[in-house]
Amino acid sequence: MSGEQARRMQLAAQGLARPRPAGRVDRRHLRRVFDDVGIVQIDSVSVLVRSHYLPFFSRLGPYRREMLDEMARTHHEIVEYWFHMASWAPAATWPQYAWRMRSSTNRWRQFAEQPDAVEYLDQTRREVVRRSPVTANELESRVGPKEPWWDWSRSKRALEYLFHHGELAARRRPNFEREYVTLDDVLPASVIAARDGADDPEGERWCLVDAARRLGVGTARDLADYPRMAIGVARRHLRDLLAEGALEEVAVEGWNEVAYRHPDATLPRRTTARALLSPFDSLVWDRDRVERVFGFRYRIEIYVPRPQRVHGYYVLPFLLGDRLVARVDLKADRSNRRLLVLASHHEAGTDPDHVATELASELHDLAAWLDLDDIHVQPRGHLSGALSTSVG
Image (cartoon, rainbow, N blue to C red; front, top):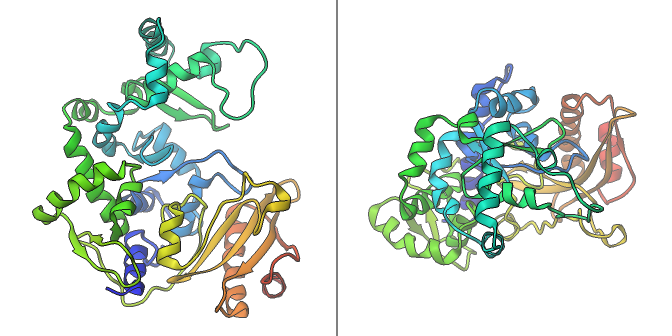
């Protein structure tokens, strides 16, 4: 297939080729997004809005964000785990990651081999059962000043060990702090039992086929990255999956590696999407894939010192049709009820006036969804002039 066909196939698989709902968005629409993408990465950065809310806006338009929190905390339809990075996925997906829960990274192995680790982990487990829900800070007071970045107390390490290995579950509080709970607090007994009886190779194969379903078509590395599986493990399963007919081998023009297509993947004749994408959206979270598929070199610059940033701090790609045509650095100025466009750039070969017109419409929808009254376009980036005129 051509590179253009592969691109449209990925957009269709990700639910971005489908028109947005005309009426009120409800939980059925949110479930449909999960059915398309499978995994929604969550992140604490809230300079615009927490990133896990954006994929639903990208595909559905304005909706009530509290519905997602209710699906996680009240209805237990979705659950957090290391499905990709820290992510939400439907609760029924959780048992398929038993292979990851049973794995032990070097970090966890070092922790587990401490002299009293077994006793400490058992004590931590009992405390969560007794006090659920509980945060790491509530379980153990800090001794000494907090260190920058990943400064974890011993109780935090124990909780994360048990969470990673599927012995505890977790939820998010309104301030995004992770609280730890028993599995029974968030998962049906049937789901827990399915994990306990799961076969690791079978789960790995399921994750690869599921990744192909979410992408439509992708290389071995693309499929392995979706559930963050080691490429060597993925390659061991692909031959069997081809023989079983679970995947189909295809050649994509311009790709240097063989590709694998899901048998149910659809190829729309054209795509009329218009969407701002979270930096952690599943369409773009694999930077190498997005460069190969869209010809769009994308790097998040949150951790880059300000003088060295090229496009800005929190930059969202803008999808129009089947192309990524621009990128905008956005910030919600909540105290002044303004959406700030700190920088805006269009891609080479695009019509800046057309891009600006479409982007302005999307920014107005975004501002209304975030309950912001105005849009202020700062004069940075070669799209800013046309965008400022279009925003009005």
